[in-house]
Image (tube, rainbow, N blue to C red; front, side, top):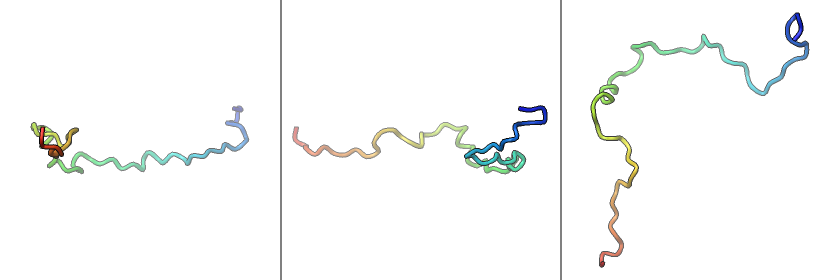
Length: 63
């Protein structure tokens, strides 16, 4: 660093420049659908399970 600024040699990078923060369009409070939010406040069954959904019969039915 010099008193006039950074070094005179160019700085190279493999990455692109950062995008302008002002270009991000953050949605407002009324920009999303709240119909699905009702199910988040009421108790319900889980949407996914960790076990098998189908019970397969045993191949050998004779004990």
